[in-house]
Image (cartoon, rainbow, N blue to C red; front, side, top):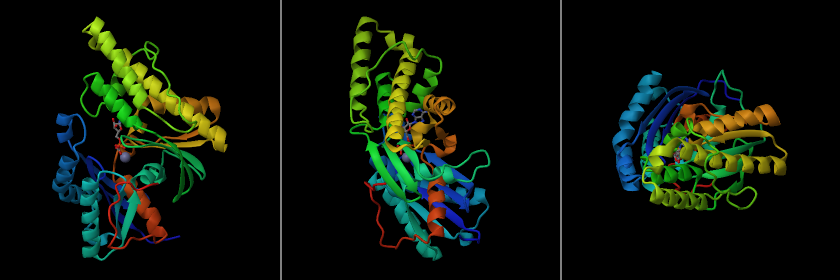
Length: 340
Ligand code: KG4
Ligand code: ZN
């Protein structure tokens, strides 16, 4: 075990958030996130615009992270960066920046798998939270991924099930688009759902493998339902927005819980840790807390700032890898389809 103080600068640029964080060992000193607003105009992330915005943001974001942490770059022990998965053009910006800075400072470079990082975010030092112990079941729910993962150790993970089509974040965002809400619609569905009746409209639960997910049928079902109702009453969405959102969220949460139940049955492991943008959803957070009370599941839910894409989660993986001297060479390249 290392005893010296380790300072990691972490860079995240896999999708549409440019983020940099500084960690002192497992403690976050700063975590700066620049969310790119430009994509709102297009109703979704435009890869080319994302990589251009990363290029503009990366230097100021890194400067801000260092300044907030009150750390000079000469004090850094290593640079950690997101290698993938994600959008290639976006990943290239963070990867090139991290490689150049590590080379310039002559310090180790550490590559990080973004999906592993969503799950290992639970190991960030936090006096209010307990950490999961191995093995545990990880549920990664984001705009790009939906996976049930058996986490045997920090870097020994096995995907037990995943989505066959859309990710759960996409299901939220696409449903929101059908309702005329701006991108990303997930947080808005969550907001309106809080005042709605979740049992008002019923949507079918997709029939796929025990640990797999499918959300494209649900999206189509919601689309047809809305089109049918709007034909009868043009004010249908406006008059029932809260109930529609609550019913959509209820269905999605029900699917996630069903799959977790199956995973617990198959593995006998009752510790559940969630990660990814959709873990910010109040429906899933509440449902998991309720399950903890009634089913003796132990549930681990990240703080809001570590749910959506952020560099602090990349930094904690950097710290864990630093201790094992899992360093990368300068010839490393971004990997858009990097598996867990
Ligand atoms: O992990 P993330 O920031 O980026 C990806 O790696 O995809 O996840 C973004 C996704 C988006 O689909 C967004 O709508 C969803 O997370 N999201 C939410 C909430 N906050 C973010 N979905 C539902 N409820 C929320 N409160
Ligand atoms: Zn993510």
